[in-house]
Image (tube, rainbow, N blue to C red; front, side, top):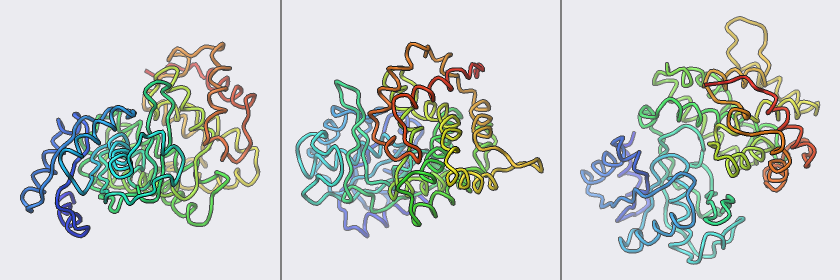
Amino acid sequence: MLEKLPEFIKEIDGSKALIVTDKGIRAAGHADRALSVLEKAGCEAVLFDGVQENPTNHCISNCRDFAQEAKIDVLIGLGGGSSMDTAKGCNFLLTNGGEMKDYHGYGKATRPMLPFIAIPTTSGTGSECQSYALVSDDETHVKMACGDSKALARVALLDPDLTASQPKRVASLTGLDALAHALETAVCIPRNPISKIHSLEAFRLLARSIHTVITGTSLPEDRSNMLLGAALAGLAIENSMLGAAHACANPLTAFFGVTHGHAVSLMLPHVIRFNREDPEVNEIYHAYESFIPSNGAKKVDMAEWVNTLVASAGLRSLSALGVESPDVGKLAAGASQQWTGRFNPRPVGQADFEALYSSALSDVVERV
């Protein structure tokens, strides 16, 4: 599938491409393989491998400076969400100037942007199908969502072979993140006929294969299911929004350094139980539960199933990560400021977030 990359560059009349990636992806051989494919097809390309996890203003400015010097006219994001966010952020600054904070929000780019091709090597963020770049402020560490329809990838190239090199922990965390995307978009307030189609198909594909990813027994078909499922979940986000599990996850990352996929996975079962108090949402969860493999057993409960996946992945509990009861208020205050919480199907305020964190904190089963 990666061999098709030159075709797409020629279709968009590109003459010189910048591949934006990180050193881990380069070490895995994916970046050099992409460069080789392009060279053989006569397509000029250069490589920026300075992407960092949770990209910041500084990282994106470095990429912008590299792109300006190279005089490129196509951007390629190769890797996980951080690579694609860096490429999108670079596109904002390269074409419209200023700093990333100038684009916090949506639709603030006034000039055309360069064509962007997204090539995910993880099955998680769905960033290849979204018009937002998530950028951390260097000083406050607050994540800024900078979106614009012009930032959306012209092409999302999905090659399951590229995901085979993921370490099992990375595959598990990104897969659980994609699952959270499918479940939160399924019930969020802005859900609509288009997003619901994407959410349901994403969940169907992810539920079929996520256990094999977590146990390290995935086959090519499983990797294909996960990659397409993550992309469809990304489309669901693009057409709707997320909810309280993601609002809870970001303060855990900011205050305790918990990886995003880990944080959202710990909070998701508790948010599911909270949301089930809404009868309409409860019906949606019931419908989705029919797609969970049950091995002939009785119908599986969604929250319990997610808990089982978290345990199988060996993810440590909040208490094992250093979170204590006195931290709940601070975490809840942070979650209350997250915009994704506004789209949760049940309203969530400070007291609700405190209850969600307290519930998660009482889950003291050690998962190591």
